[in-house]
Image (cartoon, rainbow, N blue to C red; front, side, top):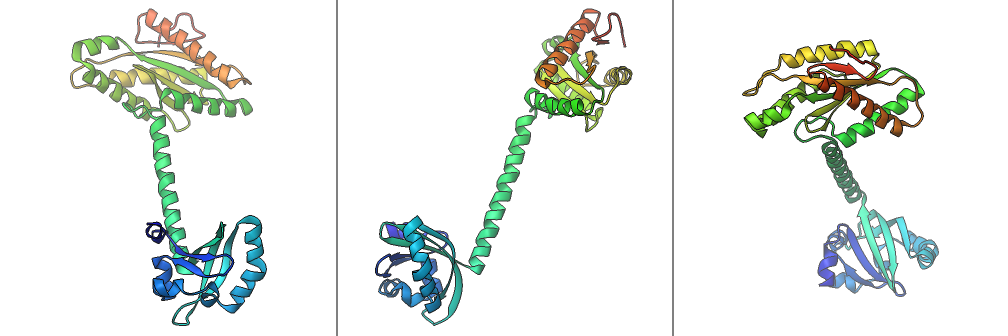
Amino acid sequence: MKDDKLDLFPSLLLVSDLGSGNINFCNKDALDLLGYSREGVTDSNVSNIISRASLIFFESYVRPSLLDSGRFSELQLTVITAQHERIPILANVILHGEQLYWSMHTAKSRDKLYQELIEVRDSLELKTDELTLLSRLDPLTNLLNRRAASADIRKLLDQVNRKFVPVSFLLIDIDFFKNINDKHGHDIGDEVIGVLSHTLKTATRKTDVVARWGGEEFLIVLYNSTQDNARLYCKYLHERIAELRYSRADNITVSIGVTQIPMPQHNTVLQVETLIKEADDALYRAKGEGRNRTIFHTDRHAKI
């Protein structure tokens, strides 16, 4: 059973006795390379299958290292087959008890193994990237989820605080969304969220952050946006959203609360929490003043 498992080893494998050098085992790949039968090779000695120069190097340099550390990597040897062919190989040798385990690769098999490892690594990296992306997205809208958006905003604010540019925070909430779900069902509610999400995504730049913040609430962070820029942008959003059509739901409106970064800050975590609260307060006022409008945190009575 042990030999069966060793035969599955993914390289040329040879096991020899440390003291005598007698060969105790060769897996099938090693037998095929050397040209021996299993019975023939186990009656042989390591000194019979490696060149004289390789043997001298092994005895004078490799053996002392094995006794000291228990392993030797990237050992270059020349093996001699039963047909007297000389083949250069690369071997990793491990000492276990009184046995030496030789894991060997020809240049061809080593390159093939390296290529397979590279392909596996690339595949794992691709799957990791895919999983990372999926973990950052809201499954219904394919917008950033709250956690991913928070992380991206902190990075953006770190950049802004090093070289200041104005940034606008917009919290957007669908007006009377509960009525849509109650009247038409959650499938239509999901359609409304999906259509609005697509509109928000196409209305933002790569430098902006757009996310589903929760339920029917969305967050947009406009990079390099003054208060006047943000007012014009919110007006544009209201107009675009008014033009949207749905399979069964009536046209929708949104309320928007906006705040600005007044100056560079040092505590970006606290800064994010403060900015979101200011935008949320402005959003609450927008709803309280009749919905379908934008209120800025610095405004008292303003409708866009």
